[in-house]
Image 1 (cartoon, rainbow, N blue to C red):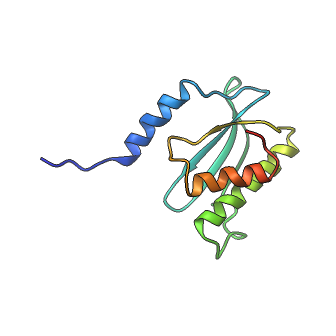
Image 2: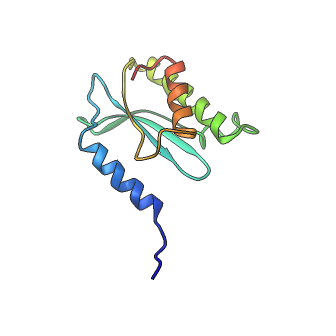
Length: 120
């Protein structure tokens, strides 16, 4: 019997495994990425306090990203989250790729965040 592969379930398992070791603090919060089929979301989270400090998404920026590819939009989201983080006084983060492979849109978002001034 052939069963359908559930890639998202596998991703969640990888994410839980990584989260055992990767945690954000007040001094070095966690930059978390979530990628849906249409949009990409980035949050900077302080896990100790349990609060989202900064967030950006291609859904929220839909008007200004109109006509761009998903990969280009990801880079713009990375730049936007970095800009908001710098304004909030955050310069250094821990990158949490959310169980996704570090390529394509996830790598593009990370590149944009670095370009925007975040260190990780």
